[in-house]
Structures are given as C-alpha cells and as structure tokens.
Length: 426
Image (cartoon, rainbow, N blue to C red; front, side, top):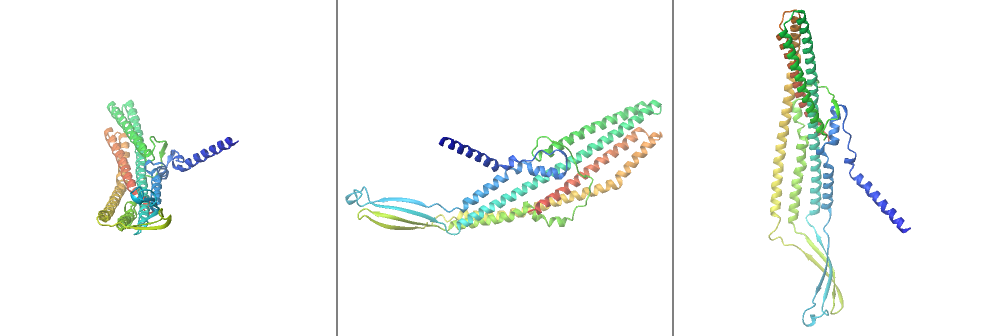
C-alpha cells in the first residue's frame, strides 16, 4: 500500500513537472501557422511579428534582466566564525585549561546606498533591453513591408508583361492573316514572331523575379518556402508625403533615439554606483566567548572598517564618467542618423510621387494614343510593322517604369509610416 502511494505521488510529480515545462515555453508551442492564401500587408506584418527568428530571444533576455534585478536587490550573507585560542602551547596553555572559544556572527553593512544603486542599474538594463526589442521589432516590420511592396510590384510587372505578350500574339495573328491574304511580307511575320518570343522571355524573367521576391517575403517570418498564393495591395495608391518638418519633429520618438534617454540614465547610475563603492562599508560582529580557565561566558563585539589607502575605486569612477560622455555623443549621432534617414525617405517618396504624376498625366496617355494610332495605321497599310512594334515596346517600357516609380514611392511611404507608428507606440 505504501509503495502504491509513493508511485502515485511520483507520477503526479512528473505530470506537474511536464505541465510546468510546457507552460514555461509558450512561444515555441503556440507559434502561429504559416500564412496562406492571399496576403495583405497587415497579414505579412502579423506573421513576421509572430514568427521572425530575430525576435524570439527577447522574452528570455527580459527574464535574464529580471533575475539580475533580483540578485542586485539581495543583501550580502552573514559569516559564522568559530575561533579557538590559547591551547596546545606551553605552561598553563599546554592543555585546554586556558583555552578560549568564541562563536560569532559577522555581517557586512553596505553604506552609500550601494544596494539601491545596483537595483537601479539592473532596472535600467531591463529597460534598455525593452528598447532593443522595440528597435528589433521596428526593423522586422520595415524589412517585411519592404519585401511585401517588392512582391506586389513584381506581381504587377508580371501581369503587364503577360498583357504585352498577348498584344504581341494578337499582332502576330494580324500579320499572319495579312501574309495569307498577300497584303504583308513573310519577313513581317518573322519579325512579329520574334517579338512574341522576346515577350515570352520577358514573362519568364519577371516570373523568376517574382519567385525571388516571394522567397524574400517568406524569409521575413522565418519560412524557407512561401506558402501563400499571392499578395494583395493597392500599388497605384499615391499620396503626397507629409511635410518634412512634421516628420523630423517626431524623430525623437524613434526607439533608436529615445532609448538614449535611458542609456544616459544608465551611465549616470553606473557612475553613482562606482562612487558609492568608493565609500568603505562596515563589518559588524557579535559572538559568545567561553573562558575555560574560569568556565565563564562573555559577549564579544567587533567593528571592521576598510582603510581606502590605495584602492578608492578611482579608476572605475573615471571610466564611468567617460562612459557617460560617450553615451551623450552616441545620442547625438543617433539623432543625426535618424534625421538623415527620414530626409532620404521623404526625398525618395516625393521624387517618385512627382515622376508617377508625370507618367500618369502625360507620358502614358500619349504613348497609348500613339500605339493605337500606329496599330490602326498598320491595318490600313499606312505604317510598317517595325513602327508598330516600336510603339508597343515603348508603351510596355513606360508601364514598367510606372510600376518602378510606384514601387519606389510605396516603399518609402510605407517605411515612413511604419517607422513612426513603431516610434509612437509605447
């Protein structure tokens, strides 16, 4: 009966331990499924936030910082000492008759608020880890959004290339009918067939570019192969970027910049801790002494104070002071680099906005009109086939140029939007 109870207790323990282990690692057990179907930008961002390899270790790192804060808050341990005097000597001290035995406890007493300084430093280390997490999350969001826009643009290029290939085939069919009717030369049919072949080659090339873009997007959430079908978005959406002064006013909220407030506080906390360590602490002791000669008992008390003759922690204090100056310089550098990044993105978005407006407003409508007129003139025998092919190629290139400029605009605009969203979220 006793063995049965023991066995049941043992199995209960192992079940409890197993559930505790599963509960201890929820991130790996509850990772989201691979995204499938047609993805929006928000779907891609959610998948990256849930599955990105670069974000997985921050939970454990925060737990490390919590453990360090706990350790910093603990007081030093007391010492227990047993001391034997006046024995195994000569004369009266030859035996144990004159022996004195002391049992005491001593306790280090930290002065200068050393423990409070350690705790403050550990808490600031945790906050800096949180800033690192936010910056890493911001980088993942930006990389994912950039890969998403690239994939969306690659889909559009491939669609336009397929449309162009269909136009080439339709033109080839028209030329072949003219050859059969005696209205066109055989060489024109060969030229039209060559144009179809070139269009098919372009479709294959852009298909490979799309496959590469899909792989890059899937890699942003740690997948080796894409499981989604396509991405969905409005690449043609065009909005003028906000004023540059309005964006620069928000740069201080970026994690890469605002973290330096806590980093400066940490440098000051390190300096305060090193200055506190320069102040000597005390060691207080109390004990009981047994006097064997008279069989008496007496109390013993002691106070110990280090003499700061050589080591006054001056080197660590100076190093902490210099580190504080370095932190201020790094904050200024981060501010300048972030402002430069905002200016570059704003310039890219604005320039692409202007180019798209020009392409849509005049160049593309004119190219489409020229192509229609050339096609109609060729059917009436007024234009050569080479002229039609040239106008069709020019139209296709302008459509690809429009997609390129829309991609540049969207990549810059989305980067600005997401960067400031992450900076403003607390």
